[in-house]
Length: 432
Ligand code: HEC
Ligand code: HEC
Image (cartoon, rainbow, N blue to C red; front, top):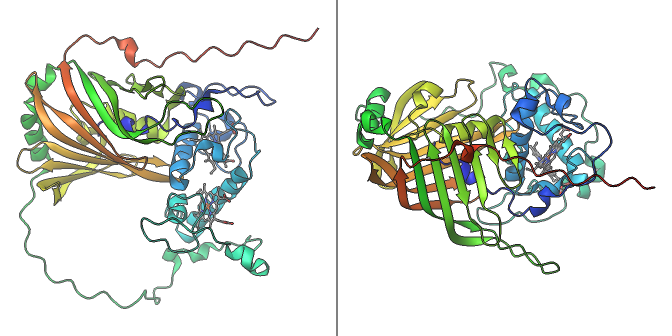
């Protein structure tokens, strides 16, 4: 479950103005969105202008927003004036609010209260829900919607969503389609090992628990190949879109549980994501991770990767054999204790090493996957460390290649601590 942060690290690279302080709206200022400040509060109690997501924990707002931008393929400014998130000054924010209400109503009525319909179900990464099927690799055509062509037919007001619509309420006499043909008997599969065996073999393959226990810190230095934002464009010139490139990257761990990823983009301050064991944070712009995002950070801070999977999941078992990049791999699955998702690990059946970890960032509105592939394991102080890490994520793939990994060098705790916020701009002087 390593290095998922590395995916989340630059959500905001194209939003340099996110730091800009807009004039504060009326009412008492919202305290900074730290996990501590949000403790025990609902979204409506903590934030200022929440109308549909009122009763969810305040910590769930940010993950929901991160989910929306991926599901719709937009940035925060699509719906918000940056710095004034509580103001309803954009049409898109109004539409999004009704969309959230609609999505929740559909799930509540037609799907037995399960989260089956999400923004992504219709939007598939595009801002406009597609009324027409789109072939993969093609963009959704911009065509008028049914409501525009047949205004009179558009349903204006649905007040009577009938809970009787849900599949579980269907009478037993209703059959859905012809019965599926009987499956041909599969060839008997080779017996799968117990999960216990797979994790024991993994620890041995890494170098054994004694050697692992002697690692107190790791400093990885090298590069990452990814979509790189162009240096900030000079005033008045059109912005240059990000392009694939290779830039310097560093990944530090202090065991147990502290970690930091830092990427250098040309002409910009280092893009940093840190976790001090409790608080997870993004550096540019400075903000804390909460909810599902914080959950991801906790997972990736595990060393060795996925070593606590059995403590963090229930029903852990080897459920299949799969090919991963040409290797036979045992697939281990486990349910998160809150029942929110099933995570998967893939271990090389020959070497015993972890090849892939698959997890998801869960939010109240939906989820997105994160896949981490581990390769090129090399010996560092008697422990095998992956020198190549390939991340497959909704925000674009990236490949870290470490040139050097140093074990047990002294690393200051302060490195992992959330930096202090920039000082507020000086108060305007009262007119005299
Ligand atoms: C597609 C539209 C959309 C996008 C994109 C979007 N939001 Fe929101 N955001 C909303 C809506 C709608 C609400 C209000 C939800 C409600 O009323 O329950 C909201 C509420 C918020 C709030 C609460 C403000 C307050 O004090 O009431 C914050 C903070 C926020 N969004 C941050 C973000 C951030 C950060 C991003 C980018 C990662 C983002 N949003 C992207 C639609 C959007
Ligand atoms: C059942 C399908 C469906 C679901 C689910 C859905 N949408 Fe939509 N959405 C659409 C369609 C279709 C349109 C385009 C309507 C139009 O063009 O007038 C749209 C339009 C929008 C727009 C306006 C785009 C624009 O530029 O006019 C926003 C914003 C939006 N959706 C946000 C969301 C969010 C956020 C969610 C999840 C909470 C969501 N939608 C879930 C179908 C859906």
